[in-house]
Length: 118
Image (cartoon, rainbow, N blue to C red; front, side):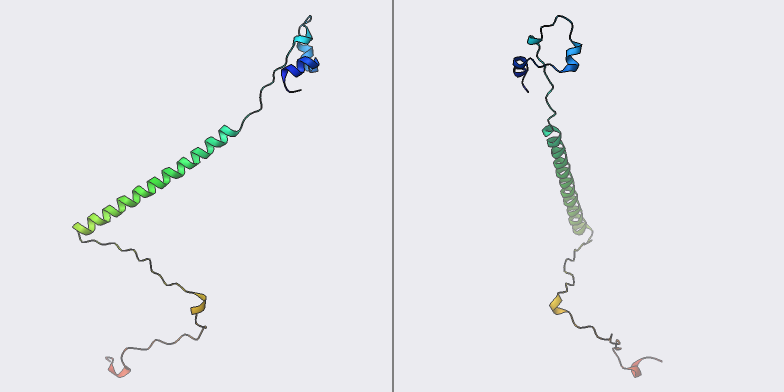
């Protein structure tokens, strides 16, 4: 019995509420209304929107900082001769190009020993 009219037709009244009714109350006309269970869709949606908004704000800040830094470098390199270079080519090792481990070789001098000053 979830709906008030079902309770009305069945004449059902919980015992704790039955004791609270004033004497002379017609129990056939009493309808018990319960509060609906809490809906969690709103708070969950709000948390997702706040999180997404924070991520978007951080991305916009990062983009603006990048644009400002690039424009500062461009202005400084054009006016003061200062340059800034990003070197993205690094040594990349692959498994097929590795050489077997050998003893370390001694570095050789560019000139023979008799050419060095004494």
